[in-house]
Amino acid sequence: MEKQQKKKTDAKERIAQKAKELFSQKGYAATSIEDIIAAAGSSKGNVYYHFGSKEKLFLYLIEEDTKEWMEKWQKKQEQYATTADKLYGLAEHYVDDFQNPLLKAGEEFSGSQTADPETLQELLVLMRMQRTVYRSIVEEGITSGEFKQMDVQDATLILFGLLAGLGANYYEMELEEIRTLYRKAITVFLHGIKPENTR
Image (cartoon, rainbow, N blue to C red; front, side, top):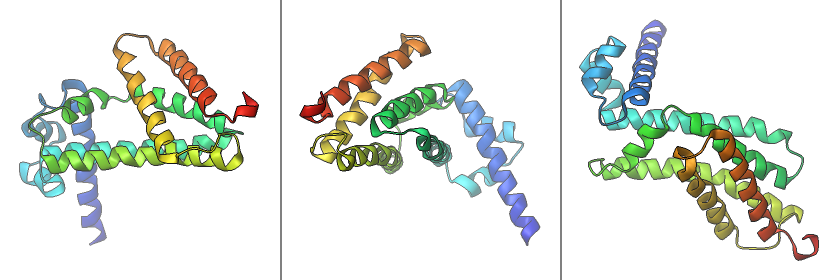
């Protein structure tokens, strides 16, 4: 029984890994189930047994990536002494993710007119998971007195929008230029949320 379960798990991981490689190289739309089956050395039935559809398989990969992003942040955040330092660290962490091979396929998928609305809704839930990181930093800053008293939800959405919006420059700038831009953005954000007597 245990051996059979391991075989199933191995098959699922192999399919997911090969699908990730294909989505990263070819994009979401250009990768077919047939491509994934051939690359994984699997059967169509096996792919559908584990994932249900190409959309669900892609969503699984995004979910795994999101968990990994959050786990890495949990470890990384411990090295920062202040909440302000955490914000600079978060910006760095965000920029590091631009090297994620699934990034372009993810943008293509989320902008797709043919994607199942339920799947897109699940994608939004994953995005909101990342926002909990932003919120916890804002709450910590307010509690410690590093940030002024303000609406936590508004500040979280502004921070999230700032980091996400700056990402549009990724296709026009070198990675180090983007890092510098993100640091400047955090400096501006911090200036707006610091208590009046510390500016």
